[in-house]
Length: 330
Image 1 (cartoon, rainbow, N blue to C red):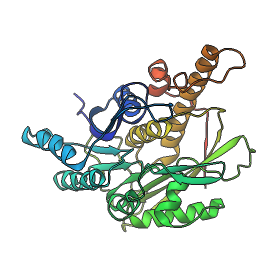
Image 2 (cartoon, rainbow, N blue to C red; image 1 turned 60 degrees about the vertical axis):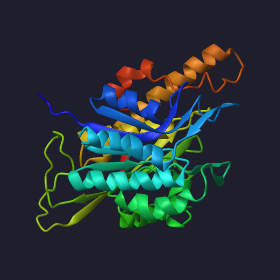
Image 3 (tube, helix red, strand yellow; image 1 turned 180 degrees about the vertical axis):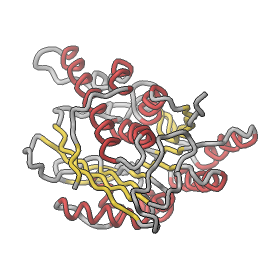
């Protein structure tokens, strides 16, 4: 019997739609992971709608939930996954929990999507309180193993602007030096050789050749590739992704969850993990926009409700994505 792999996912929750924990739980379950979800916020719907209602949870509430897990001795995890958070104290408490979990399981992998903001028409802006940035820089990133910032968030974390692929690679090196072994810049406004209809994804993974397994769950064996001296190799990849003419919410949450799954199934092979992640994303988004346009009617712009990710309908693509986007090894 295969040993279960358990993920603690601390993200936003919405009643309607697929963002945060709702965007991460179903894909991870489909791919064989057990998920324990803790909510950072509880909203009626995502904030792309005209109206939303709900609550932002604080550190005391997170601590109380986690203490309940500890008292029952069910706080044993192989992964922690975090995303959208609005409260500074809550985020600091997340770090305390990750540190405690890593003390009891040194192989635990922390996957962090440092959700802070994005660029619109070339201008970046934060959509969380600005006092979260120093917490991410000083506390969160140093304990993370995998981070998935967009270009704007990578710039915020390093204090360096990105105008070229070379500068992006340098920024990823800075992020490596802060702690994480795997850095994926999930979207950027860098020009693609394939034209303006494409956006660039860049990934960088440090591979330690000391053959220390990072995770407890059964995975294919790692191979040292003839590096007995404890040296570190770096794999870098670039992907050119065709833009979709619509605004989706929850894509970053889905990306981080699937990257967790595919790096688990393909350790030390960032190229394959990213190809499966991005190809699955492609299938989900294409199905979503096709259905949304059909329901909106000819010439009508789909509403946020119609653009909710068609997650359940994409189950087979999530489980076994046909590779439609290839990664280039740099």
